[in-house]
Structure formats: structure tokens, C-alpha cells
Amino acid sequence: MNTKKFTLPPELKVKISTGLAVMIGEHGAFLTIFGFGFAILMLFGPIVGPPDHNLFRYLLGPLICPTVIAAYRSLVPFRPFRGTIFIQAREDVDIKDPVVMDLVNLYRSKEAKSQLWATTLKFSSILFIVMLVLSFLVRNSLILSFLPSSSVAQYWFLMGWIGAGLGSFLSINCSHIAWGLKTWSSRELVREV
Image (tube, rainbow, N blue to C red; front, side, top):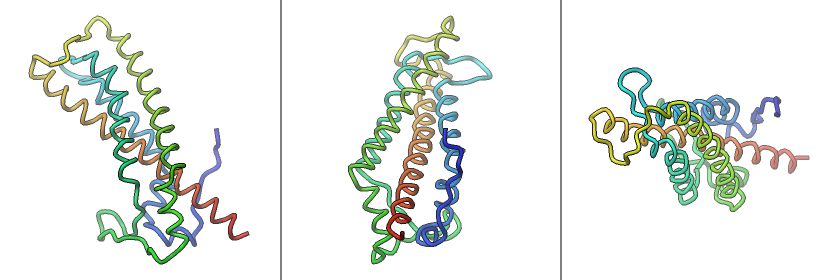
């Protein structure tokens, strides 16, 4: 495992949002792990109160949620921006700057899509294995019905899918955006030399 911390060079950091560069480029591992853990918790269901251990959600959620997120990101590639999220308006990057356009084109490339799907496959596989182990641990209380019958099960049926989608979105996007920033940074540093 590479323990070297990634830092976007200052001359590249000013070309995109500082928050994007810091939160995702430099500290993206935390957000990726948080998204993964959130997806697990939401697929698992309630920890306190009446259980809703739905086998279909456990085994289909890890396959469907990340795939939907990757399909969306393949159709709508990430577009870097400037500005601080939630504090000031986001604005488009300077499209006249060839260095920034290299980053935009990188996210639109086939290389980015193949990296995105490889990340999604890895995320989905690990999530599936975790949910398989959890379903084995709670095998005595598993529900084998696709459509929930109780009000708790109906609530968690919807919340589980939405939460797993949000966790997948956070984890996969953070990993993908961090990959793009690292690749862009390394290519621009090579061009300068």
C-alpha cells in the first residue's frame, strides 16, 4: 500500500476549486471509506429496534447501486469547477487554459471510464463479500421476500437502497476524482520537466 500522501502542486491547485483539491485530492481516502461504511450500514438495515435483514437487499444492493452510479458517471463525466462548495457559487473552470482542459479531457477519456468501471467492480465486489458475511451472521433472521410486508421493512427497503446509492456515489466518485487529479498532476509535472 502506498503510504505517501498526495499533494496537488500549488500551480495546479489554483486552477480548480481548493475544496475539491483538498477534500478529494488530498483527503479522499477518508471520504471513500466513509462512503463504503455508509453503504454497508444502509444495506444492513436497522441496528437498534426490530431487524430487517432482507436477503435480496443484501445480495442485490452491492451489485446494483455501484453499477447505477458508474453508469451515470460514464454518461455524465465529472466536470472540474472553481469556487468553494456551499459558500460561494461554483463556476466553470477556465476553458481557455490548456492545462485545465487536459483535466477536463482526462475525465472524458476512455482511460477514465475504464478506471471508473475497475473501481466500481472492486467496490462492488468488496461490498458484496461484506454483505455475504453479514447475511451469514444473521442467517436465522433473514427475510426472503422481495417486497416488504411490515412498515419497518418498507421503510428500510427504501432507505437501504437510497443510502447504499449515496454511499456508493460518495465512495466511487471520490476515488475517481482523486485518480483524475493524481493522473493530471503527474502528467503536468512530467511536461514541465
